[in-house]
Length: 102
Image (cartoon, rainbow, N blue to C red; front, side, top):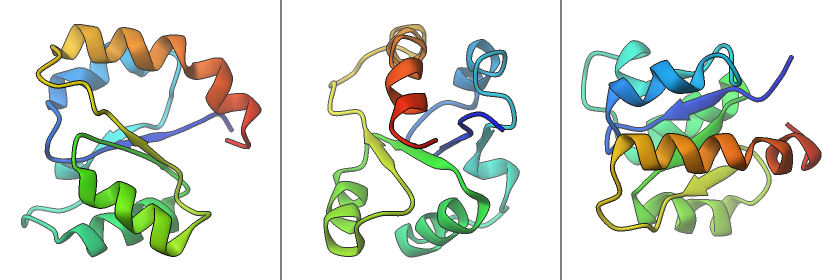
């Protein structure tokens, strides 16, 4: 199975559409839970589901530093980039993600 992304609530659900061909099985956090989950809950969902967590939230980078390893986190520290720009970035990064274990 290829890399599956979990988009956190700081990202638009519309971001999934251009990514699904290259990242099949990817989901937005709103597809997994109805309530607004805590960062720790999102972290656990990503870990348990084998997802790479994609976020604009710096707190997940801190969780990654604290817990290490799984899940991998892509912290989009790119300001107010549009969904198409973010999708383009992730699609370009696909080979690096595949080479680094997912």
